[in-house]
Length: 554
Image (tube, rainbow, N blue to C red; front, side, top):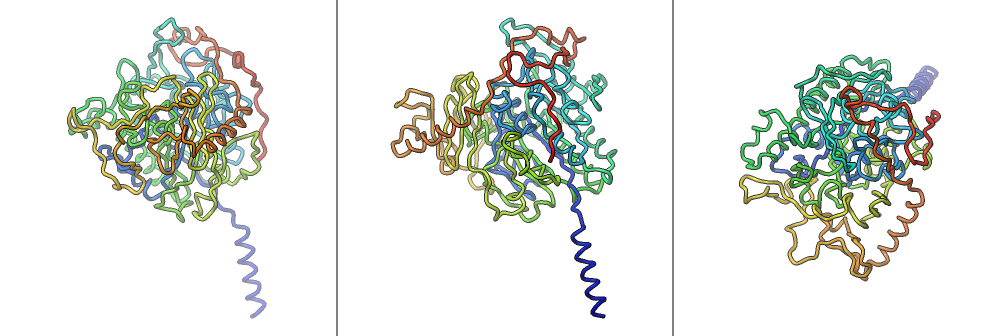
């Protein structure tokens, strides 16, 4: 009998040690230009995001989470795990006629995950290079891509119509809607009239329906168009029934914007239900993030709400770079319903997901990535916070520098346009032309509230001592960036410490990609299709190699 018991115990122990945790499916939702206060879980009284809020509140809300201030730099950091100035994409976005992209020597997120046995698919907006085919999604690790290559598009006819920024002010237009599978590239003409978030949700649901989850896990990156502007001809586009849900908002464009946020919520719910019907939710990680803060008060013809955070998209004040984000899934059940205040950056997703996928992020050297794995802190609240330093960006073309260390943040020339036009605080339009949205303090646990905007304070980012456009904030105690401490004698040592840290990072920065305008990028030369226009993968006047990297061992 004793022998039997010992044998049974040993059998159980051996069996337990041999059980391999099944790799989780990973679904990453990226919103475009979503304002900090454009989700219910941050306290907005205007928006309708019931499903996003339900996921956020039952997952972990990431309330100290940062991105870059614009589309391309943020997406480059997400996919590469490197700061934007470490891939040469720190200056503005990839625009028409520009031969720019993440250098081919850098490995991207789907390639890491594929090495671990995943099948990777992308749906939505790319905006990381398409002048040559090797820069497009299916040549960077995704098995399939359905969506558009550039930064903006019509939500219904999927045409991109822009004036060029080269000084000639040419009107370029054409279809930017593609289905690329296993590096076979094709253009899609049959989706005319299909609202983009509907089309993206349908594509994601079909991928889920047809995937064999018993053979391998899936990584699905869904980068929505909502709530970016469409074009200068029709800025904000939404089905009428969704706009009509906000009759109490007097401002036409704010109503449309709110309808677009609601459509985002519906699309995410539809994809979630597809995962549910497949029976795989118990083994799925869901991540939600915006790519940057919202474009406020008509900036870029958009009407987001970052209040009470300061400024707009494209600025390195909190409103431009502190973004809405959360994680959801059984993997985080020990922290379900919590609000994480740990400092986190969009680069951190790559090593974090490598860990969750069964890899070992510690084997990724700083030569490979800048991100820091958050896997321990997301699954165990008592784990030490792994990040206390965050160089947000360094851009030698505009002399922009931004860094956060612990609770302090230093900014020099803190925007991508060289002026302070949208550097204040902007409440969204409310029920009447003379009444903006009201905010009630302490309505949501994740809400930031700094009280009324102080009167009689100089809000400029300027130092009398140096004559430079620089500012220093104690973000933990002043998240709304009311009080510039840059000339305060009590904080001169803090400023010096941050400047020394920036100097270290400047030595590691690549120069901003700044190629000459290429007329060959005009889509009319490609049959009025926005697609690769050259066979030459070289990044003009750039020191990076265009040789494809060797597979990285994990």
